[in-house]
Length: 320
Image (cartoon, rainbow, N blue to C red):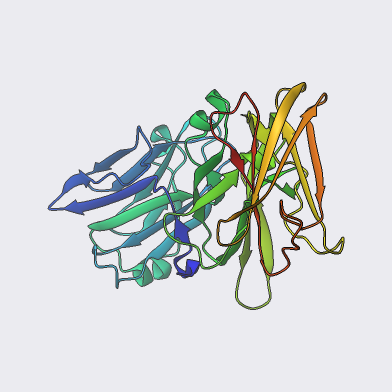
């Protein structure tokens, strides 16, 4: 599905109000500490960071055929505290910065308020951070990552739909993580850490949005530090063959510099066609294969090959 809804991932607030009572329904990845209060006004408040802005929307029922009305976009977090507040009254739409400032909020145009259809405060509200953000970053940063990692993200943009997402380091895509539309919901970026070198990496989530009229812009999440640790990795892997004629370059890196290695190559029918053995003193495993099997027969009918690489330190062969 296309990101025409413009909202993906965690909702900071998704609340229904009926008969003057606040009923809070948590969604996947709902933010802890969210508070909702209903009296004369409807007050949304949530834990926030000073560098964040928010998209705040409303609809009168839970029917998904009803469209969301944007009440505020790029709504800034309160810089004086770690709690941000949004207030809706039954007469006008009011915005405030903190609980101490509810009596002097910014008043929006009443004609705009009438166009939102908010007359009683009853309905559903949602608040999402603008741009793209990685979710559950503690899990990503608290321990070394290995293999293929799924990274859930949240997206919000009131004026565009998502075109491309990825994980980047120094503005370069890493871990074969590019994901193009259509983007499923909730959105998840798959990061293959075996395509990265072992060690510490400073990464961020990246998104490219389009307004559908030729306008494109980029968004980046805050940078986090992750540690990658794989016994066998492929930071210099060449995903295609044929540029060197009837030869295929196989290159991998062992976390143990001084070790024996064993490589098996399978064709697209998963038939074993060639085996190699060797030893590395610097962790580099490097083979130029002439596409001939163990019997000397040229294997040019297979459109793809899979390599399995093992050392005495691997529990299972690494595939590529």
